[in-house]
Amino acid sequence: MKPKSYEYFFSSPNRLLIFHAVVNYATAEVTDPSRFERIKAIAAAGLSQERFKNKRSFQYPNVPSKDLFYQYFFSEKPDGFDGGLSGTVVDAAFDLLVEKFILTEDFTPLVYGPVQDQEYVFNRDYTQNLHHHGLLLNALLGFRYVVDRYKNSVVKIEVKNANGDFGIGTGWYIDMNNSDNTLGCRLVVTNDHVLANATSFRILTKDDELIPHHEVERFQDRLGVDIAIVRVDAQADVPDFTLGAQPGILDEIITIGYPAIPRTRDAYQVVHRGEVNSVVQEYSGQNLLVISARTSPGHSGSPVLDELGTVVGIITELLYEKAAFYEQGISPYFACIPASIVLETIHPNRSTLTRTYLDWPLAEQTNSGVPLE
View 1 (cartoon, rainbow, N blue to C red):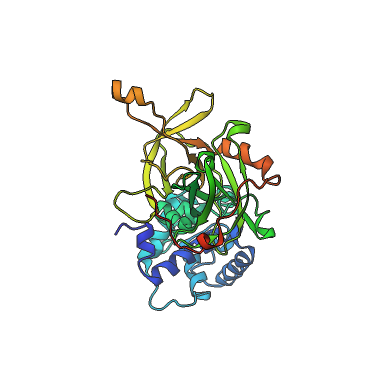
View 2 (view 1 turned 90 degrees about the horizontal axis):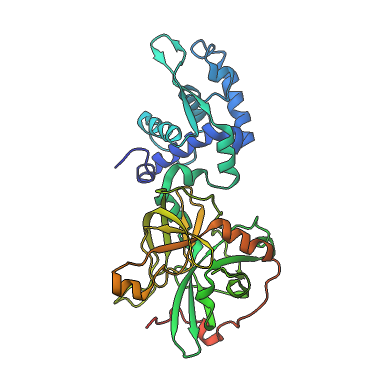
């Protein structure tokens, strides 16, 4: 098991408690002012001890160090912690904070006797920005944590057309400064083409529980953008996604969605990993990101996430021409609409939604699953 990884810290309750204690200590100046005041009090008390009285981290508690962390930990030992404090786990946690640019090692630590205490520079502004957007643990623990945290934030959209045929797409909760949550409602983002030919549809959780929906707004006809938003009843304890910055070429990404899988009865949540390959402009003039993560029917509307767990794009239809494929062997490319276009499209309209679809009939809403064939 690789140290500094999601699996390493989550493999035992004590490791996880130590990890959170290190993160809480090192970032307290911006994440928890009351905790930082307690750390300053612990540092002030430590100055009365000969071994600490000349150390910078005790004189200036905004200079993190392992010595001060140990004093903090034993002063505020986490509930549920049993056993000894593993220096290996502490070192791994501090190393991860350095790797992810929360801390920077100070290579001129002071030495007192035989013990050299590594001190750090706290990257305050960067950490404050991550904390403000709720992304600190995402940044530290990576894609495995992001998938686990947001798996319930990606929903199924099952549609029925005029012929009675069923289809499926994907949607996701978007953070619009929590304005809708205060009203007991939230916004789900998906593709316009998921809903374009639907006479009715329903939105389900990962585990097929119905999420009542209300107004819908589609943007393809009016703005030429393959995006739609749906106002739904709020779900408790399910985080919203934050829109992220434009990714760079070869930046790693993941997608989470509900593609139709052959020879299976239900729509399962599937995660793909890939990278950004290009920025292109389609015939209409709209910019798209080309990605290597596999997409297929059902992925439409899926979020494309970077390593911070922010949405950098939304999956749209394949870049595909039938004649080019059969005559020249040109394969389809997987594409997504950049997050900047998502924001430009939905932000001015989130308070002017109009109801364009009826809910599923009550008898159909109570069914836990819909056949996809």
